[in-house]
Length: 278
Image 1 (tube, one colour):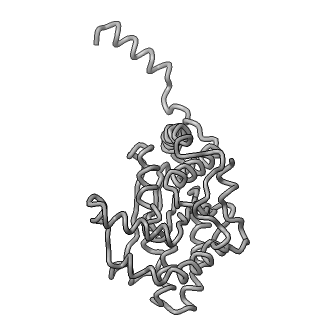
Image 2 (cartoon, one colour; image 1 turned 135 degrees about the vertical axis):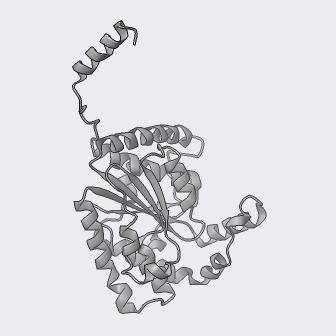
Image 3 (tube, rainbow, N blue to C red; image 1 turned 90 degrees about the vertical axis):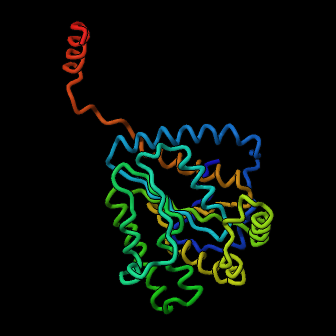
């Protein structure tokens, strides 16, 4: 299966989440069978990230969105766990600070984008301002509806600056979310994650669904695509995201740059020093 093509939101398409199965898995895969593929992808991600860092001309931005408990943290652990911490970064966007609110909604996003050779993962992203801001009427409809074009323009500017963008919507069912909430309640090691707001947001499920459908439909492009990842099964979510990142990075045909020094002179100096016992 080509995961990139299977889960990509086609530019110009109209997304209807009710038509997508959040419990989907590859019929040829299982949790047990996927273990080797995940190991391979983990190793490959590390190799590709080293190439990106060494090349130093391009950067990679991964945006993760999803309902509460969809697995953003777990996905970050899976992806970053495969990479060298040097050249990698995670940014979590929570409720804007007083300073951030004094600026355009993209101000705090621009400050966090990756530099040349870097990989940055956004835990939530610029899309919060057409999701929660819309659902809870934090701004007027005219304001949030105008933000789609601003986001598209912003992402185009990053692409023109050699930042590659992959955006993942981790899609779970409402029933699966409830099961995961219960798991948090029953598991002492996960109880620290519990927030009142998580449960307060459940009545707005349909409103969030509509907001996500608009964001996915209006802001997926060939160069900054959205991917809808069925995430009821954590192992499949990790496999699909890793596969897509690997497929994209391999398509970049990254190579190590040529050395910036004369290797023959360095070799001569090495052998001279060795002969002198230095």
